[in-house]
Image 1 (cartoon, helix red, strand yellow):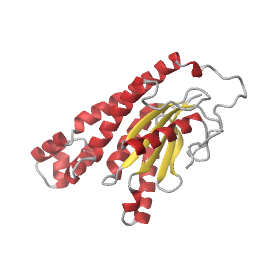
Image 2 (cartoon, helix red, strand yellow):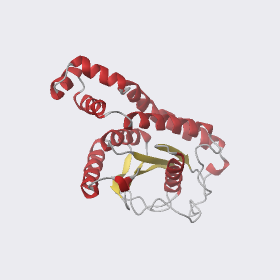
Image 3 (spheres, one colour):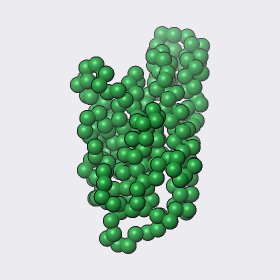
Length: 245
Protein backbone atom coordinates (compact mmCIF):
# COMPACT_ATOMS: atom_id res chain seq x y z
CA UNK A 1 0.00 0.00 0.00
CA UNK A 2 1.21 3.51 -0.76
CA UNK A 3 0.84 6.63 1.34
CA UNK A 4 1.33 10.39 1.31
CA UNK A 5 4.05 11.43 3.76
CA UNK A 6 4.56 15.09 4.59
CA UNK A 7 7.47 16.69 6.43
CA UNK A 8 7.20 20.33 7.49
CA UNK A 9 10.07 22.57 8.48
CA UNK A 10 10.15 26.10 9.85
CA UNK A 11 12.11 28.46 7.62
CA UNK A 12 14.77 30.56 9.40
CA UNK A 13 13.77 29.03 12.71
CA UNK A 14 16.89 30.32 14.46
CA UNK A 15 15.57 33.85 14.07
CA UNK A 16 12.35 33.09 15.95
CA UNK A 17 12.12 34.99 19.21
CA UNK A 18 10.87 33.09 22.24
CA UNK A 19 11.38 29.74 20.53
CA UNK A 20 10.07 27.72 23.47
CA UNK A 21 6.81 29.63 23.37
CA UNK A 22 6.54 29.17 19.61
CA UNK A 23 7.25 25.45 19.98
CA UNK A 24 4.29 25.14 22.34
CA UNK A 25 2.14 27.05 19.86
CA UNK A 26 3.22 24.70 17.06
CA UNK A 27 2.28 21.67 19.14
CA UNK A 28 -1.14 23.24 19.80
CA UNK A 29 -1.63 23.84 16.07
CA UNK A 30 -0.74 20.23 15.27
CA UNK A 31 -3.29 19.07 17.85
CA UNK A 32 -5.90 21.16 16.03
CA UNK A 33 -4.86 19.70 12.68
CA UNK A 34 -5.13 16.16 14.06
CA UNK A 35 -8.71 16.89 15.17
CA UNK A 36 -9.90 18.85 12.15
CA UNK A 37 -8.29 17.33 9.07
CA UNK A 38 -8.75 13.63 9.61
CA UNK A 39 -9.74 12.57 6.08
CA UNK A 40 -7.12 10.03 5.08
CA UNK A 41 -4.98 10.65 8.17
CA UNK A 42 -3.41 7.37 9.32
CA UNK A 43 -0.44 8.62 11.39
CA UNK A 44 -0.99 11.80 13.34
CA UNK A 45 0.99 15.01 12.99
CA UNK A 46 3.83 15.19 15.49
CA UNK A 47 6.90 17.35 16.10
CA UNK A 48 10.05 15.35 15.44
CA UNK A 49 13.62 16.63 15.81
CA UNK A 50 14.29 20.35 15.97
CA UNK A 51 11.68 22.39 14.15
CA UNK A 52 10.35 19.62 11.91
CA UNK A 53 6.93 18.01 12.04
CA UNK A 54 5.34 15.30 9.95
CA UNK A 55 2.31 13.13 9.25
CA UNK A 56 1.13 10.30 7.03
CA UNK A 57 -2.04 10.17 4.94
CA UNK A 58 -3.59 7.50 2.78
CA UNK A 59 -5.63 10.06 0.78
CA UNK A 60 -4.51 13.59 -0.19
CA UNK A 61 -7.69 15.52 0.76
CA UNK A 62 -6.96 15.98 4.44
CA UNK A 63 -3.26 16.50 3.73
CA UNK A 64 -3.87 19.45 1.42
CA UNK A 65 -6.29 21.08 3.87
CA UNK A 66 -3.87 20.56 6.76
CA UNK A 67 -0.94 22.15 4.91
CA UNK A 68 -3.10 25.11 3.91
CA UNK A 69 -4.26 25.59 7.51
CA UNK A 70 -0.70 25.45 8.83
CA UNK A 71 0.49 27.97 6.23
CA UNK A 72 -2.13 30.40 7.55
CA UNK A 73 -1.68 29.74 11.24
CA UNK A 74 2.11 29.59 11.46
CA UNK A 75 2.27 33.12 9.99
CA UNK A 76 4.24 35.40 10.39
CA UNK A 77 6.74 32.55 10.36
CA UNK A 78 7.15 30.60 7.15
CA UNK A 79 7.06 26.86 6.84
CA UNK A 80 8.29 24.60 4.05
CA UNK A 81 6.69 21.28 3.19
CA UNK A 82 8.04 18.20 1.45
CA UNK A 83 5.33 15.80 0.28
CA UNK A 84 6.22 12.27 -0.80
CA UNK A 85 4.18 9.43 -2.28
CA UNK A 86 5.27 5.83 -1.85
CA UNK A 87 5.23 2.75 0.33
CA UNK A 88 6.41 1.99 3.85
CA UNK A 89 9.23 -0.33 4.89
CA UNK A 90 8.12 -0.40 8.54
CA UNK A 91 4.88 -0.99 10.41
CA UNK A 92 2.25 1.73 10.40
CA UNK A 93 2.10 3.70 13.67
CA UNK A 94 -0.50 5.98 15.20
CA UNK A 95 1.90 8.93 15.20
CA UNK A 96 4.18 9.79 12.29
CA UNK A 97 7.43 8.98 14.04
CA UNK A 98 9.64 5.89 13.94
CA UNK A 99 8.53 4.90 10.44
CA UNK A 100 10.61 4.56 7.30
CA UNK A 101 10.29 3.74 3.63
CA UNK A 102 9.92 5.26 0.15
CA UNK A 103 7.09 7.64 1.13
CA UNK A 104 9.31 9.29 3.74
CA UNK A 105 12.39 9.15 1.50
CA UNK A 106 10.42 11.01 -1.17
CA UNK A 107 9.11 13.55 1.35
CA UNK A 108 12.66 14.15 2.60
CA UNK A 109 13.94 14.59 -0.96
CA UNK A 110 11.12 17.04 -1.68
CA UNK A 111 11.86 19.04 1.47
CA UNK A 112 15.56 19.25 0.62
CA UNK A 113 14.66 20.53 -2.84
CA UNK A 114 12.41 23.14 -1.23
CA UNK A 115 15.30 24.33 0.91
CA UNK A 116 17.72 24.49 -2.03
CA UNK A 117 15.32 26.28 -4.35
CA UNK A 118 13.60 28.56 -1.84
CA UNK A 119 10.28 26.86 -2.40
CA UNK A 120 7.60 26.40 0.22
CA UNK A 121 6.11 23.17 -1.15
CA UNK A 122 7.59 20.37 -3.27
CA UNK A 123 6.18 16.97 -4.22
CA UNK A 124 8.20 13.84 -5.02
CA UNK A 125 7.17 10.32 -6.02
CA UNK A 126 8.80 6.99 -5.10
CA UNK A 127 7.00 4.09 -6.71
CA UNK A 128 9.62 1.34 -6.54
CA UNK A 129 12.72 0.34 -4.60
CA UNK A 130 14.97 2.88 -6.33
CA UNK A 131 15.69 6.47 -5.43
CA UNK A 132 12.65 8.78 -5.21
CA UNK A 133 11.85 10.88 -8.23
CA UNK A 134 12.35 14.60 -7.81
CA UNK A 135 9.60 16.90 -9.09
CA UNK A 136 11.42 18.04 -12.21
CA UNK A 137 13.39 14.90 -13.09
CA UNK A 138 11.00 12.57 -14.86
CA UNK A 139 7.41 13.61 -14.29
CA UNK A 140 6.47 17.03 -15.71
CA UNK A 141 3.13 16.82 -13.92
CA UNK A 142 4.89 16.49 -10.54
CA UNK A 143 6.76 19.72 -11.23
CA UNK A 144 3.54 21.45 -12.28
CA UNK A 145 1.64 20.32 -9.17
CA UNK A 146 4.57 21.38 -6.99
CA UNK A 147 4.64 24.83 -8.59
CA UNK A 148 0.89 25.33 -8.19
CA UNK A 149 0.96 24.29 -4.54
CA UNK A 150 4.08 26.36 -3.89
CA UNK A 151 2.44 29.45 -5.40
CA UNK A 152 -0.61 29.06 -3.15
CA UNK A 153 1.60 28.70 -0.07
CA UNK A 154 3.57 31.81 -1.01
CA UNK A 155 0.39 33.84 -1.48
CA UNK A 156 -0.95 32.70 1.90
CA UNK A 157 2.30 33.18 3.79
CA UNK A 158 2.98 36.49 2.05
CA UNK A 159 -0.19 38.24 3.23
CA UNK A 160 0.00 41.34 5.39
CA UNK A 161 -1.03 41.11 9.04
CA UNK A 162 -4.49 42.62 8.48
CA UNK A 163 -5.13 40.40 5.44
CA UNK A 164 -4.14 37.32 7.41
CA UNK A 165 -6.43 38.25 10.30
CA UNK A 166 -9.39 38.77 7.98
CA UNK A 167 -8.68 35.50 6.14
CA UNK A 168 -8.48 33.53 9.39
CA UNK A 169 -11.73 34.90 10.77
CA UNK A 170 -13.53 34.50 7.46
CA UNK A 171 -12.41 30.87 7.35
CA UNK A 172 -13.91 30.33 10.81
CA UNK A 173 -17.06 32.48 10.59
CA UNK A 174 -17.92 32.19 6.90
CA UNK A 175 -19.66 35.59 6.58
CA UNK A 176 -18.14 38.97 5.90
CA UNK A 177 -20.57 40.77 8.20
CA UNK A 178 -19.52 38.57 11.13
CA UNK A 179 -15.84 39.17 10.41
CA UNK A 180 -16.47 42.92 10.25
CA UNK A 181 -18.20 42.83 13.64
CA UNK A 182 -15.45 40.70 15.16
CA UNK A 183 -12.61 42.96 13.95
CA UNK A 184 -14.46 46.27 14.30
CA UNK A 185 -14.13 47.25 10.62
CA UNK A 186 -16.58 47.76 7.77
CA UNK A 187 -17.86 44.93 5.60
CA UNK A 188 -16.35 46.74 2.62
CA UNK A 189 -12.93 46.62 4.28
CA UNK A 190 -13.35 42.87 4.81
CA UNK A 191 -14.24 42.39 1.15
CA UNK A 192 -11.25 44.41 -0.04
CA UNK A 193 -8.88 42.57 2.29
CA UNK A 194 -10.07 39.18 1.05
CA UNK A 195 -9.59 40.35 -2.53
CA UNK A 196 -6.07 41.66 -1.89
CA UNK A 197 -5.10 38.42 -0.16
CA UNK A 198 -6.56 36.33 -3.03
CA UNK A 199 -8.61 34.40 -0.48
CA UNK A 200 -11.19 32.90 -2.84
CA UNK A 201 -8.60 32.15 -5.53
CA UNK A 202 -6.34 30.22 -3.16
CA UNK A 203 -9.31 28.42 -1.64
CA UNK A 204 -10.41 27.26 -5.11
CA UNK A 205 -6.93 26.00 -5.98
CA UNK A 206 -6.70 24.12 -2.68
CA UNK A 207 -10.05 22.51 -3.45
CA UNK A 208 -8.66 21.14 -6.74
CA UNK A 209 -5.22 20.07 -5.49
CA UNK A 210 -6.27 16.61 -4.22
CA UNK A 211 -7.57 15.71 -7.68
CA UNK A 212 -4.30 16.86 -9.24
CA UNK A 213 -2.33 14.73 -6.79
CA UNK A 214 -4.49 11.71 -7.58
CA UNK A 215 -3.97 12.27 -11.31
CA UNK A 216 -0.22 12.56 -10.70
CA UNK A 217 -0.01 9.18 -8.97
CA UNK A 218 -2.29 7.54 -11.53
CA UNK A 219 -0.22 8.61 -14.51
CA UNK A 220 3.13 7.79 -12.90
CA UNK A 221 2.04 4.34 -11.76
CA UNK A 222 0.92 3.55 -15.30
CA UNK A 223 4.14 4.67 -16.96
CA UNK A 224 6.92 3.91 -14.46
CA UNK A 225 8.53 0.44 -14.65
CA UNK A 226 9.55 0.82 -10.99
CA UNK A 227 5.87 0.66 -10.09
CA UNK A 228 5.77 -3.09 -10.65
CA UNK A 229 4.68 -5.05 -7.62
CA UNK A 230 7.49 -6.32 -5.44
CA UNK A 231 7.48 -10.00 -4.41
CA UNK A 232 6.27 -10.74 -0.86
CA UNK A 233 8.94 -9.98 1.72
CA UNK A 234 11.07 -7.92 -0.66
CA UNK A 235 12.40 -4.61 0.72
CA UNK A 236 10.54 -1.50 -0.44
CA UNK A 237 13.60 0.70 -0.59
CA UNK A 238 17.36 0.53 -0.54
CA UNK A 239 19.04 1.56 2.70
CA UNK A 240 19.45 5.28 3.08
CA UNK A 241 18.18 8.34 4.84
CA UNK A 242 14.54 8.03 5.78
CA UNK A 243 11.89 10.33 7.13
CA UNK A 244 13.67 10.96 10.40
CA UNK A 245 16.28 13.76 10.37
